[in-house]
Length: 500
Image (cartoon, rainbow, N blue to C red; front, side, top):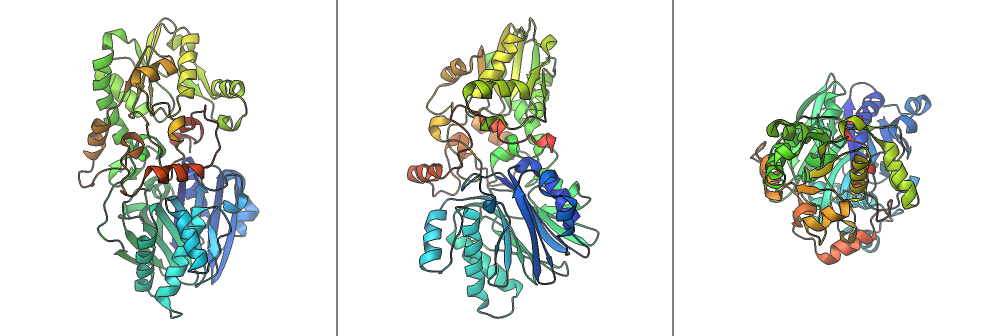
C-alpha cells in the first residue's frame, strides 16, 4: 500500500508535493521519494524513512521544476529493505518516464518473463512497480513509433497496459517534455482523485492530500480512466478499459484511508459511523447493553464506529487507552516477549476507566489477533470485571492480493476458526464481529452508483475474478516478510490515519 501525488503547475512544485506526501504519510512510512522535471531533465530524491526524515532543505533545493510527483511506500512485494526499490522508478526510453504505483500486480512474474523474452527489457529489482513501468514504456514505444507524442497515443498505450496487466494499480507517470499521466485499474480497487489550485492541477491517492494543500477537490479518476495533464495544465481524459467495474477496496474505509478523505464519493468518516450503527445491532444480539458499563475504542481508526455504537446503545463512551505516537514499529522487534512489551509501550491504559467495569472494546479490525489478546489482558490488568471485544469489520479470513500487506491464511486468526474459537484465543468474555453483508450495505448506501466493493479479505471473492488458490500461494511467497506470524500488523505495521 502506498500514497501517490502528481502536480503540474506554473510555479515550482517541490513544496506542494512535500506537503501532499505529509498528508499521505499514513499510507506508507517505509520510504519516500519525489521526482520533478525542469525542462527535459528529471531531478529525483528518494530514500527509506518517513517524509520528514528523507527530505532536508538541501534535498528540496535540488528538486526544481513546475512538474513533479511523489510517493510514500509501504511495501507488500519485493525487498522491503532495499533502498533501490523506493519509488519513483525511471526508464529513459521512450521520452524518459518516471513512475510511482500504488497497488499490486498479480501477474508480475509472467510479465517479467515477457518483458525479458519478447520486449527485450531488463528488470533490475523485485518490484512489480518496475515491471509496470516497463510494460507502459513498451506500449508507449509501440503506439508512438518514434513520432511526436499526442494524448491519443498516451491513451492507446494505457489501453495496452490494461490488456496485459492484472491486479490493482493507481499510477502517476511523468513523461519528459510532455506532462503528467495518471491512470487507475479497470476495477478502481486503489483510490485516485484529482483537483486544482491557483495555477496548478494535481492528482493524489486521497482527497485530503489535495484539500490539505490548499487545492480544490474536483473528482475521482474513474476505473479504467487515464488522465493526461500537459505542461500547460490542460487536462485530457479517456476511459481506456473495456467494461470497467467500480469495486473499490473496502479496507480503505475500514482502516487505511484518513477519516477526513472522500473516496469514490464516500466520506470515510461517515462510512465508519455507518459501520458503528450496524455493529451496534450485532452487539445487542450477543451482549445485552445493560451488561456493558462503558464503550472504549482502541485508538484510533475505530473511534467513529465506537462513538456511534455507544450513542445508539445509550452507553457512556470513554477514552481508555492513550497512544504513544513516538514509539517505533513493534513488529520488527525480535522475540515475543519484546513484542508484548512494545505493545504496552505503544498503548497505555487509563486505569480508572476499567476498574470494576464491564468494558466493550471496539476495534476497526482483527487480523492476527495477537495484539487484541494483549490489549484484552491490559484491560483485565487495569481492573476490568469483564472485557468484551467488538470488531467494526467482519472476520479477516482470506489474504489480500491487491496491495495490502495482509498475512497468509495460516497467520489469520479467523481463518478456519469459529468466532468462539477466536474468542478463546483472544481471551475476551464475548467477541462480536461485523456482518459482511451489513458492512457492504452500510457503505454502499453512501454511493449507490458503485457496482460493489472488493471485500476479498472478508468474503474470499476477488473482484478481478482471476485469482486462484495457486495464485494466492505464489503471491504469498513473494510477500514482504516484515513480521513474524504472531504479530498483528493491521495496527502496528501502519501509522494511524489520524496521526498523519
